[in-house]
Image 1 (cartoon, rainbow over the protein chains, first blue to last red):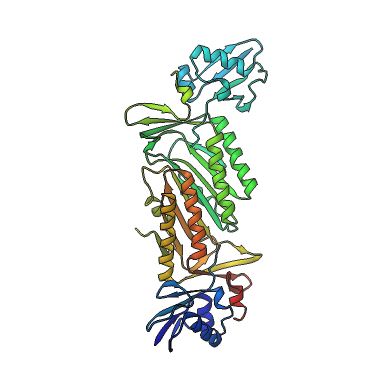
Image 2 (cartoon, each protein chain N blue to C red):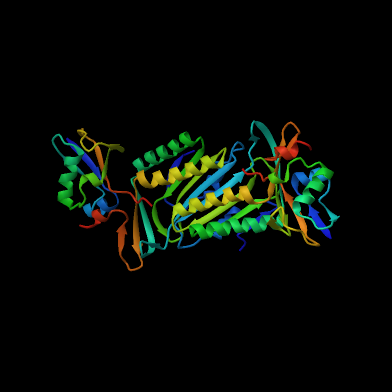
Length: 79
Length: 79
Length: 143
Length: 143
């Protein structure tokens, strides 16, 4: 299946792109994050981030479906 | 001695005037208030009001001096 | 710049806000009291505010200075006097500070203390033609 | 009327305030976040806000709706995106309600939750030429 990733803020800068798409077998957000964290050198573990699937906050362990859009959400400014 | 009284808001309306002056022997604000409450029909006891002498909050039992300006202060709107 | 003022006509809140601008401030909190069309179940048509000006200015200035000192902020307050219609601005408080927590706390402190301590009285005129000085039920009993 | 909006240019706070006017409301509380010239000991020259627009709009709208429901008030919020200079308005919250207590509480709730939950990130550019995404020290460690 195909998963679309969009990057914002620090992850966009670290990935060097605003998004990419991946061909995968069955996967969950946490698995996709680990793969991409290794590829792009993202420092924080997934437990420091939140994740959105199709523009809604989602669980890191939800199974993904073909065509899903993933966004990893670093901590927000908070003040 | 001569004491000047200024009235505001409900007391101004009840007294039917914005102020008056009184010739008195030695007196305190609470004595002046009792005298004027009787004359004008002010309902509340002095303990429900505050008093200002020469534009500063004052004690009801401070001795007054010649020329002092007295203002009786009903509860403010509070909301 | 006056920290506390009485105004007998509409207040330019934009200019007041500008006067609190400060590159060192990250938070600005404001409060406005508006004339409401009802109070305690009665329909209000208009309001009248009457101040004891000398003491109101002194006490209002004291309240704002207390907030500035206690919360390390910059602050101002203006209170209307005279005749106001429903929807009119009756009192304005603005506070700027380094952080939002102090700005909120100071803003709240000022409006609460102004309403409690500053000699400004409110007369409500109701749609039924009656009128009453607010918070002075005992005073009004014999009027 | 949008309860929560993102704006890529300066915000007309006067029009926003007008949209909350209501003859049944006696209290109006507002908060503005301004770009401050310093943060944690460093001199800030300018800021950049970047939003994840779809989710920011959904979550911001949810926050404002929660406050309206919980405190029985009317409320709106606008957050800037893009490049901001020191002194610029970064976020605005306005709340009108029958009484001031609810207005203050709702205003505080909204700004706190917006800052905590809405995916908008802040990059600080310092006077020494460096820049950093705020609150993401661990993220930046390997950058």
